Amino acid sequence: MLSKLNQMVEKCGTIDLIIPVYNEETILESQLEPVLKQLPEGFTVTVVENGSTDATGSILDCLKERYMNLRVISLPEPSYGNAVKCGLENATAHIIMLDDLDVLDKEFWLAGLSIMIGGGTDMVQGSKVLVDKNDRRPFLRRAATRVLTSLLRRLLGFRGTDTHGPKIMKRSSFVKIFPLCGNEPDIYPSELIIRAQRMGLTIKELPIKLEEIRKTPLPLYKRIPRAIRDLIRMRVKLGNN
Image (tube, rainbow, N blue to C red; front, side, top):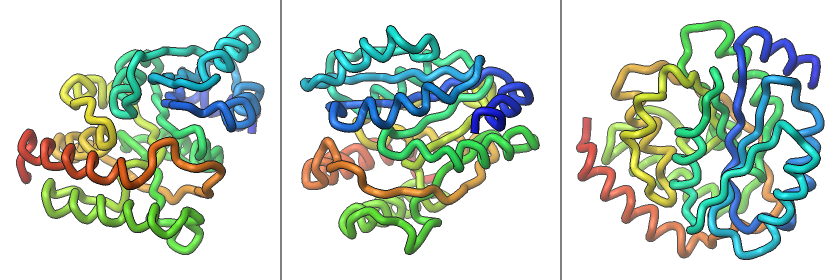
């Protein structure tokens, strides 16, 4: 993987991987450290810790002392949307990648970066829906993804299968879009993609490997009402194109 990533950095310039985290002490080191060990020069990881109440912060402090390619941003309140927004707006690399700690699909990274190097694409979007039967998440999580996608299509004219998977994007294509997006807790990535589609940017989807390795930090019964609330707010803000 290291040699392939070296080639990618040489061809597309600097890369910054943004990872939002909240109360991830159980998987943080086991997921993050193997990645940090394999990354070449020019490939930075930015972890945006937001309002964690467990040992996440102290683990990150230890990792930061050992790895020069790790940058940590800490926010006082838990908000996935705010963490994503902050990470993207603070990135300065030519290529920005966004992924979740429990995913970190390296095959998607390599395939997506190859597409970006080929030109003509502004973003590569990872899709949980495209993997179909290989989506190993619990039924309710899979159903929630499909319901959200359906609502995005009906209410906002979304064209695609998923908005919340990992992303690889050209910073130059998106730098003007980042400030326009709100920091809604759960659907910031959806607004980012919908705005990009409406601006005519080219987005390609790829399937990702996904398997539950820990319980979600925020239960679905709390996330769903909040996501619907934020979806209605976004519909009012953006209208149906």
